[in-house]
Image (cartoon, rainbow, N blue to C red; front, side):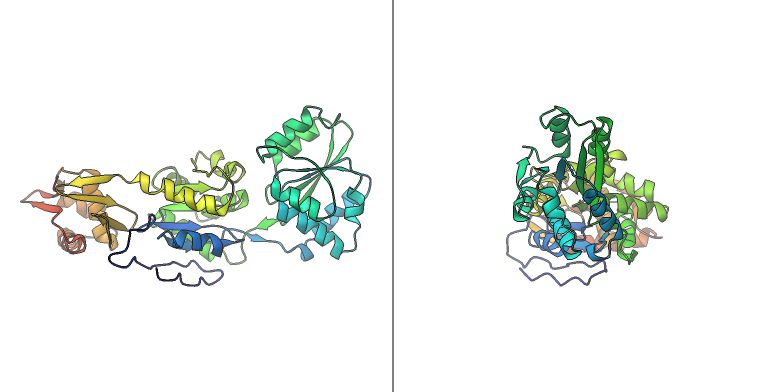
Length: 386
C-alpha cells in the first residue's frame, strides 16, 4: 500500500491514498477518521492509515512542558512540606515525569515518598513506581480510579481521616476520586503532571469541528478526556456545539480509549465505542470493528453495495465519489428500491443546485460505480435497482 504522507504539525492533514486495483479491500477504506490526540498522534494515524482510512489530524490539546510548569513545582513543594501517608500514581508517563522533574529541580521527592504507601492505578504506573526506586503497595484489577477509591474507602489501607494523600493527575482532574477521599476526611494533595491546555494554533481543531458538522468526518478518536472536553469547548466558541453533539450522537462514531476519556462525551449524551484495553492498537481495532458495521451491505440486483463515508463498495471494489454523486447515492440507498424525485435530490445536494446538477451527479455516479445500479424512472426520478 502507498505510504502515508507525513503530516505537518499544527495542520489538519489527510491521507488520500486509494487501494490499488485488484488488492484486498482494507477495512476502513472509504472512511475519514479524525485523530484529536497530541501525544503519539502520528502512531495512531499510521495504525488507521494502514487499515485504509483517510486520516485527519486535528490536535485538540497541547501539553504544558514540565520545565515551565510553576503549578507543578508548587504542588511538589506542598507534598514535601510534611510526610505523606499514601500516594496514588495514575499513569506511568505522568508519575515518571513527576519524579524526573523533581530531580531536575533538586527537590528530594523520591526520598520523601519512601515512607508512604504508593499505589498504582495500572501496570504502566506500577512500572514507573519501581523504575523510580520506590515500592508499589497495591494496584486494582480494573486499572480504574473508581476501584482505587473503593479500595481506600474500604479501610484496607487504614482510616483515611486526617491522612495526607498525594494524587498524581495526568490531564484529568479525577473529581470523583479526589472528592471521595476528601469526603472521607483525608487531606488530598493533587499533583497536576502534564497539564493539558488548548493548542497554540487552534485552526486545525476548528476545521475539524466544521468538517464534522458538515458531514466530512465518519469517526473521531479520543485518547484523553481533556481532548474530548477541548473539542466541545472549541465547538462552543464557534457557535457549533449543539451541531457537533448532534453529529456525534448520530452519523459520526466517537471512539474513546477508555471510560475516563469518554467522561466529557458521556456528560453531554454522546455514546462512545471503547476497546477492552486502553491501548492505541486496541483503539484502532475498535474503529475497524464498529465503523463498517454501521453501513449495511445492500443486495442490488446481482450486485452488492455498501455506502461508506466518501466512497461506495461495489462487489468488493472501492469507488471514491465526489460530494454530489455521494449525496445522490446516499439518498437512493436510504430508500433502496423506492423512487426519489429530482426535487428531493436537488434539496439534498450541497450548495445550490437544480435538476441539471442532479442529472450531472447521476451521470458521474453511474460512471464511478461501473455497473447499472441506478435506474431512471421517467418523469419521476431515480432509484436503486433491487
